[in-house]
Length: 370
Image (cartoon, rainbow, N blue to C red; front, side):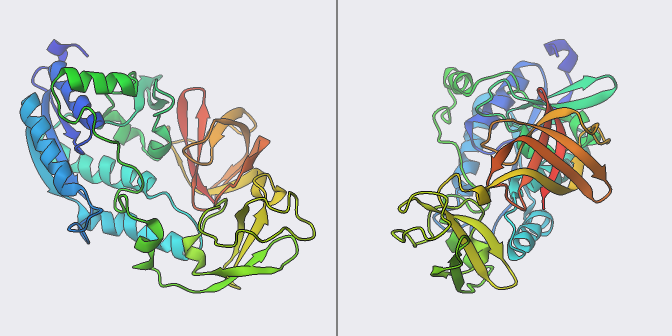
């Protein structure tokens, strides 16, 4: 939109204290929008600890807002986050699955609680610093991959619906990360070189297992070789492990036994979790057949357009965020879920993670791997 078209219109931008959301606000201000910044506090159980950066983030937000010339409101969504995101996160881990809370956070907090709040403030739109795009096509809103494929975050946004997308702006859709940092530097924003945050938002940089142990008590059990059922060691709890995990098993140096698909000294990987017997099964070698799947089933389906895509068409899918698009077909869709078959076997397909379907640059939606 041009500057004149946006004049007098209010957009509320989610500001995190990072360079991406800061530049998103800057661009919207330059486009003539009346920009209001919103800093969301979504976690407060241990925000005085060394791993929580929320205080510094708020300081950075206020500094950026002052430089750009916009107002900022601070809103506490910790109650909503705990009820809608964290409770589901714990439930999934306790069931032996590996959830992705960032997916739920986007659909339930950033584009629901945040959106509702922004609309009450009289805003026409909301905006974030996500690397993704949105466009209206043939009467529907489409979620698009970002121009910068290395930063594309459409995977985390695949549960957004038509109403949410109709109100969303993604100013960084056509930008590369290097250009975003350059814009911040040229505008004199001190966050231009700020390190990107990593990991799950409420955990921060702390060791994940240590955090999870606060909420899910240890329950020791055997680690067994899937090929010959030998006992190789002991785990602290199946909850703390995920399919494809290599580090932290503490069984290095054990030679592969009968039926091993690889060399005697290859690394061990988590292949299966038997919740009933509390046994963690592992295999040797990255390309062990037990780690490869050519199909999966997903439930809790969410389609951006509101309707399921055609079956037996060639699409692409991701079964985890840092993964190349994999050609696939959707073989069956019903009210309980869908069946997806891949052209080539996929590595470490993990229950609880999201499978996200694409048709070229358009994100169609997805579901939770079961």
